[in-house]
Length: 325
Image (cartoon, rainbow, N blue to C red; front, side, top):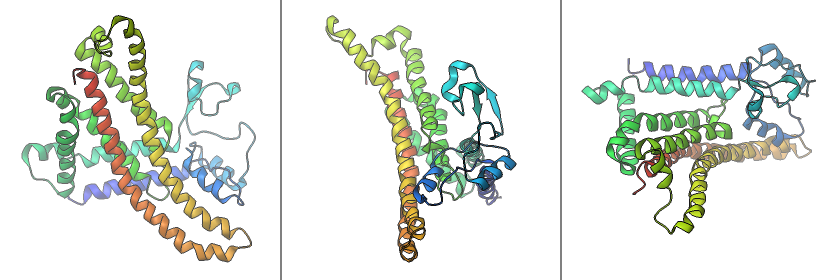
């Protein structure tokens, strides 16, 4: 039974990659523009019907408007046009599915499977190596990241939130390293949504613990009355800048690593498509070696960024709950 969960987790990742490749719209790209074609893989791909995806991929050209058939469209009110998948006012406002959602759902399933025996281990002990590994991770997050940044009573109540943030981000980061997969955290909309959760907990949690009026009053320390309005605006900007920093930090770090890998791989295709094709073969071992090295570094970055996002969220939330600190 100790091998069942790793096998299930590997099957989920493989299944997500297969579903993404089957239903994702192929990005149109020019064969003579190696870097442009490779960098398009960083863009979210619309989920379309398989026949439409294959036709679009074979043509390698932009089709007339209306020929793409999304797999699922959800009507939205007009004021939510920011989330419209095609940004065309003639077609109305619709929310569509992208390949990122496949890997987000896969990350949720991975979390559920990975932690299926952790609660029993925490109560009674025992369990396999995978259970002990994730239980140790939970204890580290609790004792080294959450409790030092807020009162224990609040930390213990918010542990499920921070556990979910850390491991959800971690699994999304790691899945992005698998060939054929996409990295949801390399999309700024995904990282912004995660940061909004932290912002909501900062504001709503602070208002709940301190009181609706005391929270906003305590944003500004004791200063002369004439200076209070100016500092209130400054502190209000500071509250909104914190989740913005979380958004950009995670997005930029996960995108940057992939861009470096794709740059090395692009050198091969760039030289292979010119008169210096022999140089393409010569540079291939070096480019692949550097790409593998960067991928190893990215595996470390995947853990670091999940750690940084979670601990900064704990610091920001703790400061909102306890302004005296």
